[in-house]
Image (cartoon, rainbow, N blue to C red; front, side):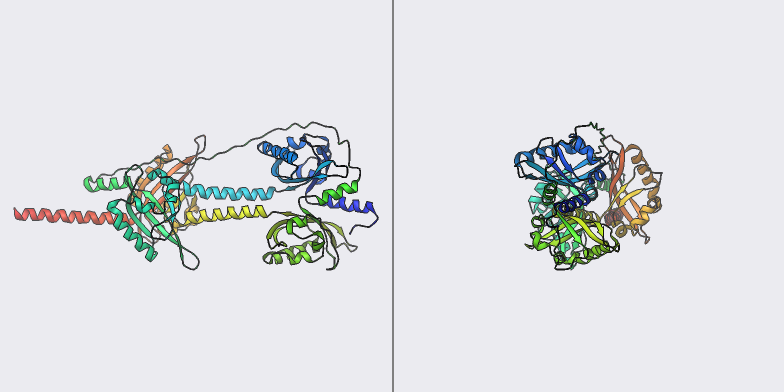
Length: 588
């Protein structure tokens, strides 16, 4: 690979390899405020400031670090100086245009032949990866906030006799006075808290639901921590796996104590009572900071390493990532260059990995086809190679790597020939991404499987219109309308209100919009198939730190069965009074 007996050729190779890598390589002094001894020219493309300025201004590195990251980065650097252990951090660097670049910065201490210590490192632009992480975090936070701020108790329980709780939302503490931890740690807490007058019928219905797997819908009382009996409407759906085996019940418990009180008064006095409950549990934080940085000229670097060839060799072979030379035309028995760091990443020595086609055999089977297609594309077109994929390490581990390579040389016919590249171990980041994806999937499944309509609505809207930001698919199961039909037409919900309820509900909606008070109403809607559906809808206004309204967040339950049962009871009462009255007259 290196021309024997020609040190200049070796230096040229190392210099070209360093200065064409898709990363910034550098050497720092062993000081609390390090002096930059060498930096590759890619730093200007990554951070916007020329290499000469970085080397002349000793304060530039620390002055360019984002204020929120500075304390952590400086503390990590001082700790690495003290322990002489590798420095590995991720932080933001300010560019001249005012934008920030996320960088993965890692370096290790290296002692030269005279016993002097310097730090050799690499900085990689990870802004795109951080954007993905932020997107995943925002998505997870959105679904978590949606679940945990629904004004009802959201839960998941095992399909067993004890109804062991697998998840319960924070609303359980507001509703019953028990913390989430108490609810999760005591497997049979639900059975223990059932009101004695409701216990037998509720447990029998629970056993029947477990046997049949049919949706659960029940009204009963639970004993709160202060001894009160609290009425709930409990609606749940059994979730099954791909083979039809039951996994868990997902449901909501809605506090209907006030509703029960109203029903009693309706039976006795035929009066109507409005229910209002003020719930505000969600706050959003917003912060935006700008900072102007002064840049002062400092003296240029006063010394250089005596042997340039040794400097470049040490830099390449002590990077926290593996560098390599890819010769497109190399035969299978022809050696290729790879730096010794390949052993710390995959367990193979540079000599073992240095066979031209050996790397192909270690690509993960699920990634091999895509990787070989991408390498073929780069070898034919000369375009840069950049890909994240998996290797099988020597000890059998699966290792995720980020591999990037750029074209350095073409053959006499102008075809791509030599690429220089860098391989970084990104296994930890991939594991973190997988965990976030799984968390988002669970929360999304939970909100989409709740047997109720969950929605988010803009606060400022014309009368009779509902500008929805989100509505879960249960609206199709309850009303027959798709999410697209309701979200695309702001006037759709108003149009399908029952004529006898429309004026009252639009007035209540306008009053909530004007005052910010919670919306809490029962009303009828005309389903897509013409059926009349009773809904109990409750929504609260979420505001920012300054009190400005952001959106309405609400939940609507299908209470048609309850209204039909009330109607039957009223008819029975009327017939009983009629029979009693007739009997009295006949006796007289």
